[in-house]
Every structure is written in structure tokens, then in C-alpha cells.
Length: 156
Image 1 (cartoon, rainbow, N blue to C red):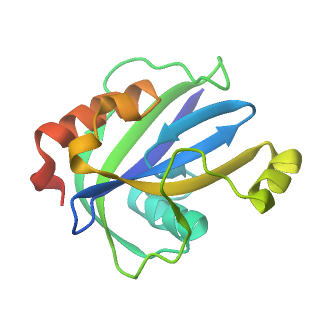
Image 2: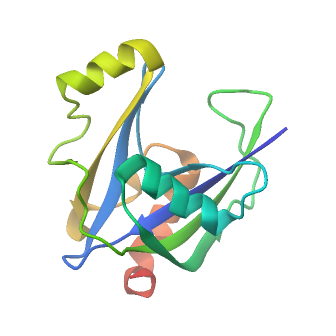
């Protein structure tokens, strides 16, 4: 079974990279914003929907950056193979979602939600000089972080 994921690389005017810090079933994960492709949805539509749902943010989806070209088993379902697709995105609105300054800085309301759903997330920007593959958790994200770092201005 394939699990198709779509992620956005958003680099702001200060050359900071947006990441999502998530607590999923007891695992702390820092990744690029995005999520799962739904049936009947195109990849770019998926990414616009994910940013709208997760951050209440309208984005323009730009250039394709990377699609997984190797086998990656899902960390959450060993019967699934992950295919991840990454695009550059640009915010069309001011970001209204709370942004944090440190990893996994969940507030009390989010922690209450976690008790029921076992999933919460928050967002933060990482300055360009501190951004690298070391700051993200997932294997495919690490490859993309290296690509972005090597070709940063191409994705803005």
C-alpha cells in the first residue's frame, strides 16, 4: 500500500524556513508542513488544503523540489510505503497561526487535545544559518533539507 504525502517548503523574507513540530503517538517529529493526499485530489490542491487546515494560511504552490526516489517504509504503518512530494510555497496572507521560538513548545490547550487525538503540532521558523538536515526528523525530509540548503534561493 502506498501512502502519498505532500509537503511545502516556505522560506520567508528573512530567509527563515518554516517547520512543523509534532507529537504523534508519543514520537516527537520536526518536519516540513504538509500531509496526506486524499482520494480525488491533486498534489498541489492537497498542499493548499493542508496549509489552510493546519495554519489557516493560503499559499501559492511553486516549483517542484523533490519526489521520493527510493523505498521508504512508513514509521507508523509498516505495511505502507511512503512517497513524498515537495514543492516551494509562498504565503499569500500574513501568518496568523501561533509561531513558536523553540521546538515542541506546545501550550496547555494543545496538550489537552493530544490526550484525545494523540497528535498535536505547532510551527516555527528556523533561521537560514541554523537550518540543516539535522533539524528535521524524517529520512526523506533530511534529503530535501540538504537540497534546499544547497540551492536555497532557487526555492524562494
